Each structure stands twice: as structure tokens, then as C-alpha cells.
Image (cartoon, rainbow, N blue to C red; front, side):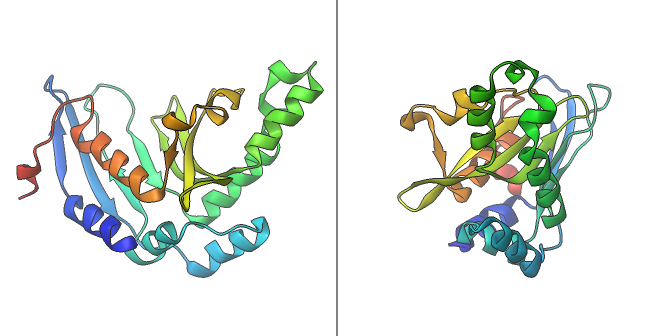
Length: 203
């Protein structure tokens, strides 16, 4: 299962996307960091009573935790885009566990809505962080939601006070599987809205 993901990541490892279509300097480079600890990820699984997808586990513990090195040359803060280490997963899970109480002011007078929102947050298992110093997203597996054996992937944004819209998306608009997420991630880095990247540049 992880072989296709490994081939994809290693095919882009070290590749530099220097500029976007407007000539702005990006400097996006894919880096494979050290693998995650199997025992630490297993401890998280035990605490949740849930198992990470097998292809994610193989990638994280054998291929390595991928991240993007970048510079923006005066066009904003540096991009922080990385697969999360086990300690970071634990920290974000702790934040999610009290998210509604700590961050969602709109539920102050709506205890039933608060309970529904917290129930959604309690299903999210973070595995990737993307931020630029002013905003951040965390990509998560959704515990209990699978399609053809693939776990649903959902983004949680820094300013989301309500996940209901994402959680209740039409099935056709939902994303499933770690491999599909990695492919989308690579496409966004090297062939995204900032310009086109040619496969021939992989050299």
C-alpha cells in the first residue's frame, strides 16, 4: 500500500519549485524527514481505541515525515507545511478536546449546539499542519467515517468555529484515503494555482 506513496514522495523529494506563474519567488522544496516512532503512534492509537490507516503508518514510520521547505521573498511569511510528529498529534488532540469551550464563542448560549460541535471535533485525528504565521489548517482523519476501506480526510481551519458544514458535506464532495490526500498535496505544491510545474523538471 505504501509503495505508491513512497514512489510519489521520492519522485519529488528535493525538487525545487522556484517561482509561480507571475514570477514570484516561492522556493518550495519537498523534504523527507526522519520517520516517526512506531511505538509513539501505537500509544496514540491505544489512547483513542482507533488505528491509523495502514498506508499512513507505513509512510510515516518507514518513508519519513514529509515537509515543505519554502521562502516567499517579501510576499508574506514562510510557509509551514508538514506531517505532524506524534508529540504534535497528541498536543492538537488535547486542544481539540476542549475546542468548543476554549474557542467557540458562538455556542455560549447554545449548549446543544456546543455538544454537537464537540462531538464532531472528537472524531478528528490530526496528521498534517499547514500555516503561514497568520492562519493555519490541520488535515485530519475522521474516526468512524470510511468508504471502501478508506478513511475520510477533512481540513480543520484556524478560524472554524463550526465544523458542521464540512462534516455534513455531500458524499460526492468528500475526500477519502491518505494516498489521495498525498497526491492532492503534491499537486498543490508543484502544480497549484501559483503556476504550472512540468513533470519534465523532475530531471
